[in-house]
Length: 263
Figure 1 (cartoon, rainbow, N blue to C red):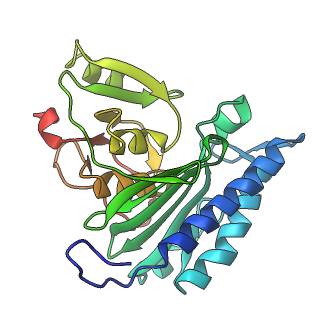
Figure 2: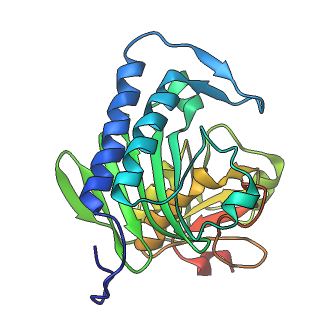
């Protein structure tokens, strides 16, 4: 894989990475077709056999593409003393949107990102139930595959903006922020699909002020940045970064087709 402009980058084979994520998606769908148990994690979030099946697929397959560490939501208890020495690693959410999965919605995803020096370089988001895969990275580009057709993605900016919010999280701070855009259209959906819809040109903004984990955002951020958008911290305007310390919790962020919409 090469960056735009022809510079060679040490990136994995994009097709092989996409196919691995799609295979993990098929593991999820096989579980969805039968009865399965839902277990609560210590933080109250759900986990299912589908999460674990996709996790096993990814932790086996990713090192075969690039032999670097893997940090997965389902195996995230890796001490900072070890992670602080990681300059390059895989960051995976085997099943983003487990609540959507359990509740019967289709907008759950497999997320995989390549992180280098705290910056997301490449990401794949696969939505198994939608038969759709997105891939991209800043300086590389972004693409969408659906029904064996590939389309290159470029953001499209509209005013008033089209805003996406989480189906499960619409807190008072988010509602106050939305009041800045009284003429905006509003749509609710789950998982990292929100980043990808902005990358496709179907939306402009996705604010998130409540807590998320780094594996929730990295792959979607890569796709959106590849399409010309951004994921920024609202106070600093800096891009969301990764592996910054002991905590794997993100601060507030806004995904956008154009940061100028926030001014």
